Amino acid sequence: MNCIIGVDIGTTSTKTIAFDLGGQVIAKADAKYPILYPEPTYCEQDPEEILRAVVSTLRRVTDELKKGSHSPLGVSFSGAMHSLIAMDEQGKPLTNSIIWADTRSKEYATRIKHSPEGHTIYLRTGTPIHPMTPLCKLAWLRDHSPDVFRRAHKFISIKEYVFRKLFNQYVVDYSIASATGLFDIRHLRWCEPALAAAGITAERLSELVPPTHVVSDLADGLAEALGLEDRIPFVVGASDGCLAQLSANAIRPGRASLTIGTSGAVRVAASVPAQDAHERVFSYVLTEGTYVVGGPINSGGVVFRWFRDQFAAPETEEAARTGTDPYDLLIQKATVVPAGADGLIFLPYLLGERAPIWDADARGVFFGVSIGHTRAHFIRALMEGIVFGLYSVGLAVEENTAKIDVLYAGGGFARSDFWLQIVADVFNKPVRVAESVESSALGAAAMGLLALGVLKEMGQVEQMLPASREIAPDAGRHATYRKNYDLFASLYGKLKEDFAKLSELAAPAPRQ
Image (cartoon, rainbow, N blue to C red; front, side):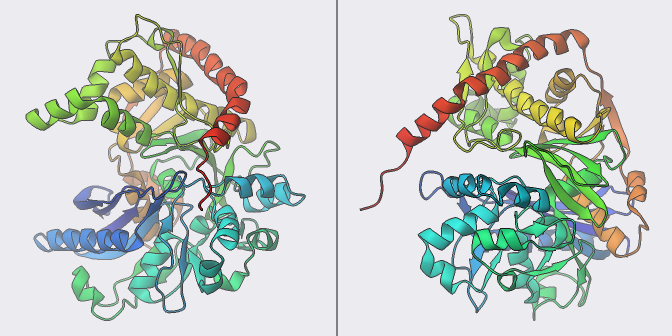
């Protein structure tokens, strides 16, 4: 047995990757699935489609391993945060998976946040009160889908759904639980004030377990279907964000991880949760005594994909014709524009925003458009706007923890030196890039090795993860970016009330 399989259940795809004990990729498979938008502000996914993605990618990887001399020690999981599925007593879903980008519960988020218990709930759970959280989604379900709410036996995340189908158990790790807004991160139990605000009791949630928890009783016939040995250990693992922190080598002081995938985040590890009076950052549990403090942005790769789908027909056609990636073609165009995009500034809030502003009403804005701006300027401004959003998170994280000396980059964007240079220049900090950019799957694999005793403590993970290169910041470009960032931050403050008014104008008409 000389490898470990990491399964990363992400927002737009599941990636299953087999790593050797040194962290090198042996075999990999991925399966994509869509986000569903049944109504304005709704963002959902079919949990059965995601389960099929997990099963199919696992089988493809195990088939590939059998061609060589590799045999897996076990399988460990990473999962996207903040999803909510209502399950009936027979273990069937009553709803789709309502994902982090769903903002239908924004009125409930406002109500809970400004209630007498709101700040206490934030401090005890470590999770800013926002429509992304199952806390607010449950309150919405209670009032808007009372029949579903009444019939629901359990309320779970997508990773819990997969484990329920594989093992007939309801278990949730501390890391996923701490992103629900319902979990007391200091005492590692469900938080009573938050449960009361959601209108549920702890019995309607899964059993809490550490990320190193191991199960091995696969449902009948599944081991054969997955191409695995009977009773192979499955490690419950943790959330994608916390595992990206582990795999990024960002556990030591002064190190931060920065990721851009579908969304994005900046995070640091800490021995105590943040006590942010402004409620800008989260504090999630990685393992007992280790917290991941940071903030997520909605406005990551999903914004770049929107631009590709709506405005990049020439690049999409060229990519199809030449076998290249349309994103590479778009980035290539942006490189001809100077830093700062000649004064064009982009607020990237197409899906509202999470950290640090936590405003579901925020919307996208291109500011400063002039007759001299080309499509290439818009591409560069879009990329810079996404990084400005991350920079605003980084400033809030530093304020609540300690100075960040170096950024460890992960996620799909880390394949692009141009993206990485923008990050280094905006933050004015060196950016280190690991040899593997499969951060969450590698983090899951590392957690699996810790759970199975191959690694004895988290510090040993660093041996698996040598940084392949470092991108140095440019002081001149940072000076330009700092001026643009100041405008970026000022614009949101000036438009905040107008975003709220616009949200009222754009609200869907009530059903007849």
